[in-house]
Image (cartoon, rainbow, N blue to C red; front, side, top):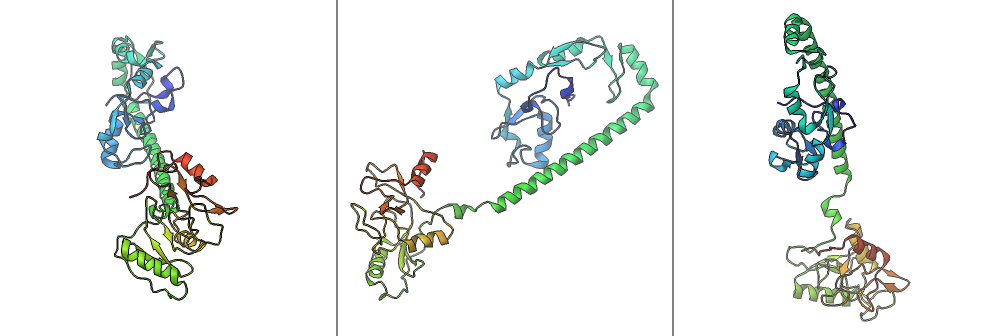
Length: 330
């Protein structure tokens, strides 16, 4: 394994993206993760992956196939970093990293290979030093191992703490189902047991449409039959067909329904109660508003709708700007 390059050997501060998060030294034969583009020493990541099976930086599942050679431009920048010869201060040379190997092979000054020993001199002097200080070198090696072991335990503690924080965030974040609007149920249609005398026209229309279109009938917060899954080019939502208590929108029949007008409060509250959040619809296919989003909420008797000039509310307009490549769900 190549000797790690301590950042203290370099003549200037080493950029953070050239430091291996595993050994904390300057990357050697660097490989970068395809997803987070973080670089690691080739030897370090090849030893890490079989045990950790995740990227040490982004913590995503990973295999060695997910790591590629560092980009050419970054490799050139890395090679231009200047550092001292390993035999400093006996050797005062400062060379580029790309030429370090060539220099050290030809350097006439040698250093003791024992970590922690600072002896340097001509090769014959180093050889004599190694023979005469064997016991001292053993003690140095033991001290170095003890220090590295303490550093490793500290890193393991930090990683464990990060994993705990990640798990906590996952538990606190909303689930996938709560982020998506109500979708059509694949189960066969069922008839509502709601009292037909309460809202006879809405119940009859709902039951009739349900049988024809194969959509499921549910009850909203006012126990009125409402259809779930009717699309007509829109995202699935709930509507009951009752006449709304707001001024009718131009080109609509003034009832709660997809393509007709906004949802009534009862249907909207049912969606919100289920934790789905506001649902939005898309303008009719082929119309000028086909690429816009509408939520149907009314303000000052003017509803956010594709009809009558396609008036969007501020929330829908902001959502569309954030999601320029909006795609409807299946």
